[in-house]
Amino acid sequence: MGIEICTQHPVLEVERLKVHFPIKGGLLGRQTGVVQAVDGVSFSLQRGETLGLVGESGCGKTTLGRAILRLVPLTEGSVRLEGEDLARLDRHTLRERRRRMQMVFQDPAGCLDPRMTVGEIIAEPLKNYQICCSRDRVRRVQDLLKLVGLHPAHSNYYPHQLSGGMRQRVGIARALALDPAVVVADEPVSALDVSIQAQVLNLMSSLQERLNLAYLFIAHNLSVVKHVSHRVAVMYLGRLVELGESVALYKNPVHPYTQALFSAIPIPDPNAERLRQRTLLEGEVPSPIDPPGGCRFHPRCPRTKAICREISPELVELEADHQVACHNP
Image (cartoon, rainbow, N blue to C red; front, top):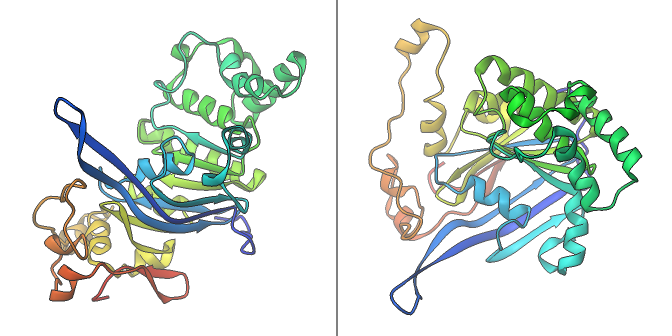
């Protein structure tokens, strides 16, 4: 990544964030339990930086991204955008601050209104915030289309007339319409053909350099995350277990879950792939409704000790830019 990252003031700070969903049942609809989707996550994000967020399905990655954007309510914790705590803002002020954070969704077909043209889709946030007049909005839409590698004539197309890669470019253009500081990209290339994925990733990288954007990049594809991220956060059952600089973390993962996760990355060399040893985990991921006590990974961990069953480890710094939540690092 060629962009210079500002390390003085984080554009986004997440502190002890929790998102719990109540489970209700019975005739009276009483609460019978809680889904601990996100449980005490903390990290910061600098301007011009990409933080990759990885983990198994159901670990809370998407919920975390939506909570940062206040699309789901917070149970506890704080989200500070450019120094301002979003959890303390009233509805009107929060709406204004949302201009500075946007989201690129996983499914480019499902997130675009099929009854609206591309121009109407991109112009919609400008209309919602009453930014510029109609003539200037048309010009702004054309500029955004050029910015993401599309032709201004595409503003008259409907989403179904575009390819998957082109639709995702429209989604990116819509996200950039309000000049955000932070973009949450939730699996932005997983629904695209492999040949198109690289084009979209390169586009996002060039836009980051040009606009000094901060990305929270949520993905399953560990190779993609390694390629695009400055730092990587590994999530397991609602909590971060390891956080560090991308190259160093991939080279030397410390947490046993991270080691198992990274050992599943395919190697393009058949001989090396045959010879390497993978870390296989036993058992299933516990339910977030009833997570295990202590370290949440201990039922599947090959290095479990008595303390792991009793005390939940905090995310502590092992060395510069490398944190891990483990009693036996």
